[in-house]
Amino acid sequence: MTRYVDEDLHGAEFRECDLTGARLIGVVMQDAVIDGLITNLVVNGVEVTEYVEAELDRRHPVRVLIRSEDPADLREASRQLHAGWAATIERIRRTPGIERRSVNDEWSAVQTMRHLVFVHDSWFRRCCLGSTELFTPMGIGTTVEPYRGAHRLDLSLDPALDEIVSVRDAQTAELEAWLDEVTVEQLAARAPVPTTMSGRRTPGAARCGSASARCSTRPSSTTASASATST
Image (cartoon, rainbow, N blue to C red; front, side, top):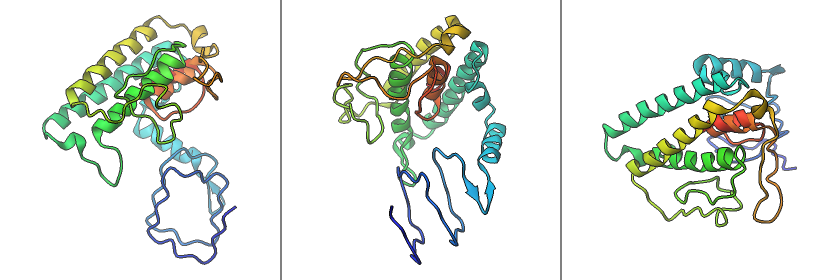
C-alpha cells in the first residue's frame, strides 16, 4: 500500500487508476472532480453513492430503462440512445473538424464512437450472441485490452466520420432486431460468452440482460439485457 502523508497533490490527476479501498483522511479537497466506476463512497461519514446515482437517473432517465429486464424497456432505451446520438452527430456535422477535437485529454467524438464499435462487438456480439467472429478493425478498446491483436483491432486506421456512422447504424439495426425478438427468459439466461484466444472464458459475464445494457454505458459484467442496450 502506498501512503502519502502531508503531501501537496494540488492539481494532481489520476487517470485509469484503481483506487479501491483508498482512504483520504484530514485532506483539503476543493473544486475536485471524480469520474469513474464508484460504489460505497463515504464523504465525511456520509455514504453518497445512492444520492449520486439517483441524481444521474433524474438527469438521464434512460439509465433506468437500461437497467430493466423488460424487453420493452430495453427497446425504448435503445431508441432513445440512438436518437440522442443522431442529434449529436447532426451537431457535429455543423462544425467540420470538431469530431476530432479532444478536450482535457478525453477521447474525441470519433474516438468515442469507435469505442462504441468495439463495445458492440465485445458486449453484444460476443457476450449476448456468443459470436467468435473477429471484431470490427476500426474499434478502439480500453488501453489495457489484452487481446487487441487477436480481435483484429487496428489502431493505425483513421476512418472518416461517415464511415464510423455507417458501421454504428448497422450495429444499432442488429441490436434492435435482436431486442425485437428477445424474451425475458433469454435476458435472464447465462450469457453464452465464448472462450478467449488463450482458451479461457472471458471473466465476469453472467446474464445476457446485464451484458446488453453495458453496451451503451461502461463495460462491466452481468446479463444479456445489459449488454444489448449499451451499444
